[in-house]
Image 1: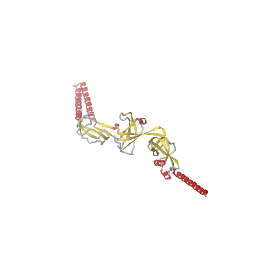
Image 2 (image 1 turned 120 degrees about the horizontal axis):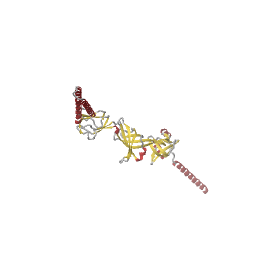
Image 3 (image 1 turned 180 degrees about the horizontal axis):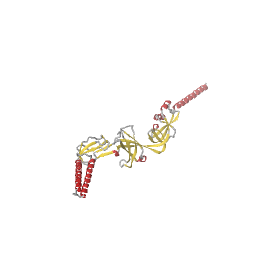
Image 4 (image 1 turned 45 degrees about the vertical axis):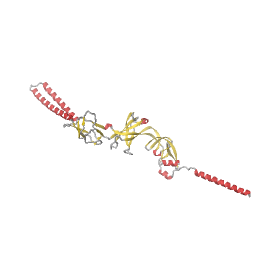
Length: 365
């Protein structure tokens, strides 16, 4: 009887151990982390691209400022002294070539008019004297020397008249003692330093107006020492401003100042940009992106497939059947939709180029 009871207890114990062992195995299996697989529906919506190799294009972003094209800026200086009247333009106004901006009532202009009248009178008198001397010469009352002297006097009077006419023409040609201030080019009044009833002098060295046509402007960019070697004449430039988000102005590097500014410790680079619609205004701040093609190749991937986390760049390499692998990469630089790499992937590998961050999070979880 005791032996039978012992056998029963032993059987119960073994069964209990087997049950606990099976339960433990089941729990262990359920606790194991299952690898993430991209669902078929998500696979249909994401974009998968391949790692490619191509010519390396370098890109640098600089700060800059819009300025006048100094080759298309005209300063208007007074040619005569006098009192200013009739100023009818304001700062920022658009003026046309030849447009009268104001009048200077000038005693100098009156003197130029008097000089012209005197020259005309002297010529008339000299011509009459020549005619009289020639008649006297033929009558034997004057010598040939007298006749030649009278002819020389006429030529001198003609020269004086020509000079008086040129001087008056240079100063506007007005015979009423007024000098007209005219716009020498079409453009905008960008500086105005004169007002009505102001007395001016021709020898004070100050401009009355400054006009710029603004159809072409300069952008000066600051290049710091670390990037000096990456800037070249003719490099393509993309300029953007806060005033026109999303709009890119195209230009090229046309001047490099081969010295550093002592204050900013930066080298100035000039970019010439067409500005037909006058969108760019002087003194605007600008973001200047310089791109140039180097004589070497590098691998690149779509920028949309790059993930930055914990001070490291990653891409998701697609292995097929919904499986992706987080792969660290070394970034060289980015340009638009391309990101150039130095290590981490090889040409031909497939990477996930859209919704990469979402899949990256699922893989980490």
